[in-house]
Length: 626
Image (cartoon, rainbow, N blue to C red; front, side, top):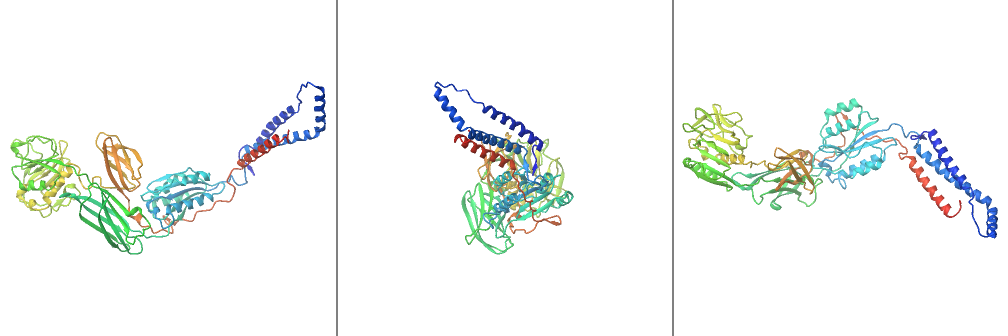
């Protein structure tokens, strides 16, 4: 037995002082009180009773004194905080990393992998030795501690109820770095990873673990592997008819058997298409929907096993997308008559087109973009502009310096990453003659000949601009589908209405969600209904989401819906791993704590004092000790 609080000398001193005070109080109690009686016979009666019970009364007073001294002795001993021998020796310092990634939502073990993992952690807590300490952390895209490094089992067990799975992948490297920081200079350092084993390699941390002498242990979770997942979901409006959408869905069957599934597309909450598909084991099956109608705001893909049963991971059975908002744009076309231009602009029903001649320019009203066909205005427009063959009249300063003409140019180079070139093929376009335009600083050559640019994108006076270096009538571009696509892509680029606008984000990453200018804060509501206020930086609400589904962003009167989908497809491969390797060394089974009593003995001493006081109270009121 060891005293970890007051020393033995201090305990004896405390007992002597308090016990002496109790003894003095009892001596004072033995002094008889003076009692005035009105009748001598009563006094004689009292004296007679005192003489017959004198010995018994002395015995009762001694018993009461002994009880009081026993209470003082127990409390003094409790102040010494007694522990069993060896209880104060250095024990293990454990950091338990609980995998809370998407694959831990699998139900191949009841009720889920995460719940089974938490039960295994409870077993670790119950097996802690008298000097062991533990910290529990949730490991997904980041590592979040849910307890301090403590030896209190109740604190550890209560914190486990707050761990929930997220729709992201786990970062083992970040978890190990966190654990190494916690365990620096701690005795008996050990990291316990509780996971199904779907973790990225952590080569960089392996050497640090060896240098620090930290043991890595692994508790495998999971048994089954049946799953069919949606691993890709791309949605965009059809360029020439924005009431319809193009959809790409990819299914993956990482399990060991072929599966028959039903794939359902849901637009704005209503089913718009259902297909039954066969997905072979290990196959990635892609399905392309050319013209999907019936969805204007949101689109969702759902996959289910055709036999009516459920696969073992439900989080990847859904994918979500937000279609770009269709907004009307006012377009001013300045031309002396170009049927190719008029026909291309009429293909989009969401364009309000006003046509004027160069003599009628400028027109009244506000426009989102102006198309100049073989005309350069004396002053640049106060909006976005498309210049077709921008040859200025004498005395007019155009958007470019012109060096001369280029005969029979070709699109030898095309920037396929620019929004203007989406869905277009320009390599075989024939052009008779083009202007030799000289781009300004900041301009981007989207397409061109080795002798000069043919298609330029840039800004003028703070407004976006697109320029075609040639006359449409002197090429066969007007006879190709690429011509209206180039015009409509340019207008979409002007008004920020492209295929990537608010379509979907990936869980586990930092999102930058567009909001109107003038706001410095926004509120984002998660699919579960939780709301969080987030900062707005450069017109974007900054938020990191960990769950798939539809979110809502609000800023003042503005409200918009956007979508988020599960991150990397590797989470859908739910084959459990039997071992975990960090570097070249496989992780071991967790060590066991030394047997011993972990609870402090002083708690039981205080309980004993309370019991003695209860006996004293009973004996006093029964007049056994008075």
